Amino acid sequence: MFAQLAQYNDVGLFLLRAAIAAIFLIHGWPKLSKANEMAAGMGTSKIMVLLLGSVETLSALALVVGFYTQLAALLLSLVMCGAIWMKVMKWNVPFSAKDKVGWEFDFVLLFAALAILLGGGGALGFF
Image (cartoon, rainbow, N blue to C red; front, side, top):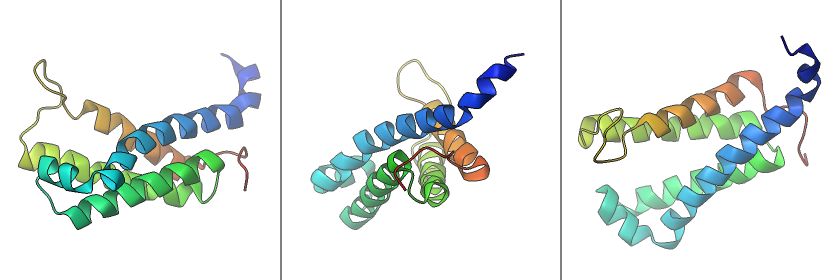
């Protein structure tokens, strides 16, 4: 229907990468800067929080600059699988709820990362 827009495929993929990167930077940085507080809130160890924060932050930076985008997307997909597992199995969070954040946001991030993993990140980037 909009065949003429196909010429902007790389721009669209860059925008997707940038959006995912922004989200993971915002969620990854506190894990690095406030690891003790985050570990207590998540019910996990400080080392696990630091590992997650490192993976999230470094993968986000890789996505935004176009460096090993598929590897970054794979790592973020694994992080999101873990996040969904924790919400469903450990915290009993529903997919969507009125009184709390469900795992629908995690679901969208998982599939956005999978789209980049399977389709590539496009040609735009610094590397």
